[in-house]
Structure formats: C-alpha cells, structure tokens
Image (spheres, rainbow, N blue to C red):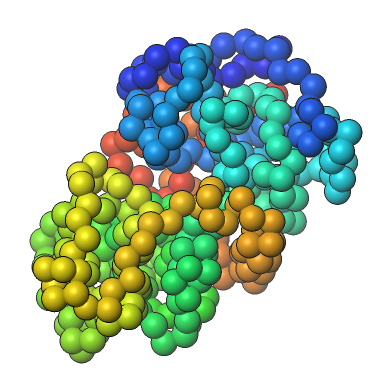
Length: 333
C-alpha cells in the first residue's frame, strides 16, 4: 500500500484526500518509482478545480507530473534504467493517466530522466518543469539569442526564475515584471537586469525607456488576458509574444489588428505537447539544462517545502501566489 493523493470531486484544496492504495506492477513501458519529492505546479490546481486545458475524465482522480525518486520496478520493454537509480519524473503525460502525488507511483519510462549528479531530491523535483518550459519557449520556439531582450511576466514563479537564468545563459537581457515591489530585490538578485512593478509602473513606458524605444524581441507571458495588448506594443517587428499561462483567467484578444497589424508572432506554448512529447526535442532540452546545472549557471529556486500530509496546505499556499520559486512536497519513507 502507498499513501496517494486523490480527489473525488472538483473544488478547492480541501477536496484533496490522502488515501492508502495498491500501486501495482509497472507495465511493459513503465517504471515503478519510490517518490522522494514532488514539484507542485499551478496546472495541478487548475486540474483539481476544473479549469485546466484538459478536463478530469473520471473520479477519483490523481494529480502530479513532476517528482524525484528512486527506481524500484522496471517494465519488460524498458531499457536504460536499473533498480536503485536516482531519477526525476518529467511533465510528459496526462494526469488522467498517471499521477505522482504519492509514496510510490507507476509512470511511463519516456517521462523519466536520470537525476543529474549532485542534485538532491528536492531540487530534482524542482528543476524540470520550469527549465523545460523556459528553454522550450525561449530557445526552441522563440529563438532567443545573445543581444536580444526578453520581458518575463510573473517573473517570481519557478518558470519565470528559470527564464531569467536561461536568458542570461544565452547572452540575452532579461527584464522581469511582477505585480508588487515586494519581490523586486529577489528578482534582481536572481539575475534580472531590471524589474518592472506592474502595479505601480506603466509597462509600455518602462520597456521603451529601458530599450531606448526599441522594445523586446520576446515577451514571455504567463498572464494572458487583455494585458497582451500592452505587451504587443513593446515587441519589436517580427518579434514573439509567447503565452504559456492564463493567470488572468480572462479572454485573450489578438491585438495586432488594433495596432495596425504589425509583424507580430503571437502563439501559445505547452511544454507537455511541444517539448517533452518529442524524444529528440527533449534530448536537446535535457542536454542544455544539465549543462547549465553542471556549470552552476542554473540553480533551481525552492521557496518552501511541505510534507505529503500537508498537501492541502501546500495547495492553499500555491494559490495565494506569494512564493518566489518552486513549492516542493517531500515524501517520507
């Protein structure tokens, strides 16, 4: 038996239940993992309350796509793994099919990477979703390169912080945007060249001031909604406005028409569909991220650690939105 988090109805954090379940043996292309730490992501809160891009197919439902642990069982067709291997589970599957909020979990082997040497379970559960998302969106899709400038909204999130580090790694200039001044110093310490406090400053004016009127090559946005009209105004002709989240919860317009139809590339990005689902794309991304971890250019930022028995509290904390970096849940043996 393994303690496993499930929910039997849509709702707030209070619907999460910790239950004892049989895990079962891994299928031919699966691994059985003893989970040591779980990385929380906002997608899980959206899935839990019924507002995610993918609806819950049936109840009781599971949660979680990112974890660190140890291999305990290996499917008959799986190669490259051995019992006892330290691994990380990546966001590469539907939560309708698998979930890692548990002491033990069966996951597809295609969603597992060996954990880089020197990375403990907490950081091993905090690294892949943020860095894969930021790398896939900024480098693979947007083509961010040395000399470019990128505006990063919701910059204190784990993805935002990873984006700052990746921008610096490729020689680009990261400008961070955050709602209040409370996180400004932390973002500057994390490597942002400048910080725009959106609750106090005009984003368009500040970006134009910071770029001598030129604008940014990439706007990397987690908020979406009506605010994309302002972001579109500060993207250079031919630049990219890339949306990877919908924190606003509001409809998102395509603003190019009201701006006189400039050469604006506006698109969405979902890491599970574009990076982790393709083996070759994932290989390149993992190599880039592992290299950054090895040299110290990348350092996962963990805001707070909860225990598995505190999962309801952990979700409440995540939804409050005050964290800087990743929220991790550890799993006792």
